[in-house]
Image (cartoon, rainbow, N blue to C red; front, side, top):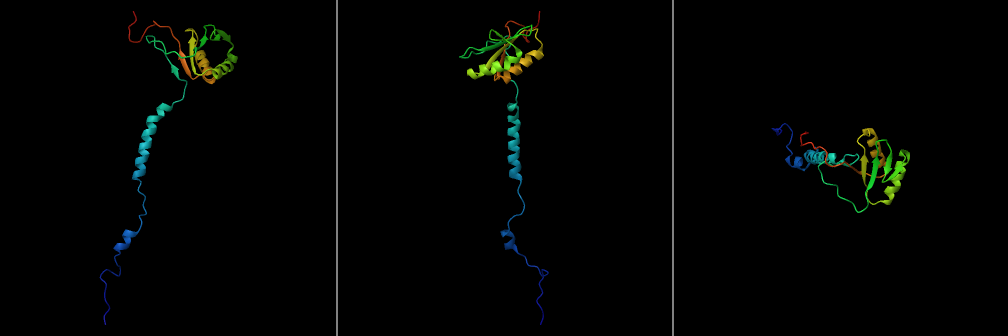
Amino acid sequence: MGAAVNNSGGKRRRRNRSRARPMSEINVTPFVDVMLVLLIIFMVAAPLMTVGIPIDLPKTAANSLAGEQEEPLTITLAADGTVSVQTTEVDRSDLVGRLRAIAAEREGSRVFLRADGAVPYADVVQIMGALNKGGFDNIGLVTDTGGPSLDEPEG
């Protein structure tokens, strides 16, 4: 008697089992899509999260800043280097402590800084740092109106 010969070489096709077997590969396409969306969101939001000393710089031709309900706190830096809070002269070493005490009593954090034009820029920045350290993060620089503007030629 003869043996039956299988033409497939002894291997059977198993179609039904291959469909039931779970896929062992990870589909990364949805993951990449989500990551690209998050990247775009962070790229747009990152410039908005910059940290620094926020300053309202009034333009020479601009209207005055909107007033608050409280009397605005004014810090004056004179040409000779003296610092005054409102009308009271304050030693620079006591400035931060005085500002913290004032900030604890006030509702708003707005302060106006008046500096003489002859004062070096480094001194103005030091006072701004003291204001920030003292609890005032909304600093407005006070200027006189009627000065030259950038869009008008000097004559």
